[in-house]
Image (tube, rainbow, N blue to C red; front, top):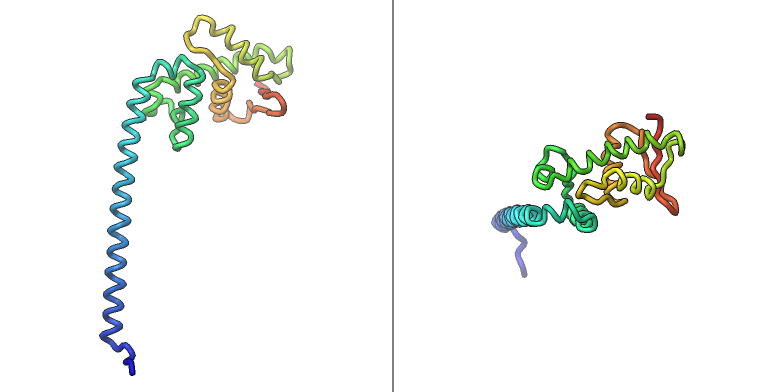
Length: 172
């Protein structure tokens, strides 16, 4: 006949639980350390990529959009701060803030003609005419990013998307 566990059996079970807990904590710490190391390596590789392709990111709208999409997929916002690391490295923060100012200017100039509702395509055409001498081309994606940065000024600008994308500029 089997004996039931006594105090010795309970103590062994408690010791085994403690060992499993310690082992679990060690594994979690190792995984955390490995993850931190991988993130550090990834960040340095992303920084190196950005440095290497800085001019392409600034000048090529398609490449810039792909770079932003890649950053968004990994949770990095290069536009988060004008004084942030990415803005200093790439200068893209300035690009979008300058573009935002130009968008406001176009909205103010065309408001008497369109009542504050302008298609994104027409807005981009106005901006391209204004920026002919600038090296950086402007795409609709660039305009949408700049408009999203204008939201910090309040609810004066919003995009309306139906079959076409429109920018509505409320009273300026």
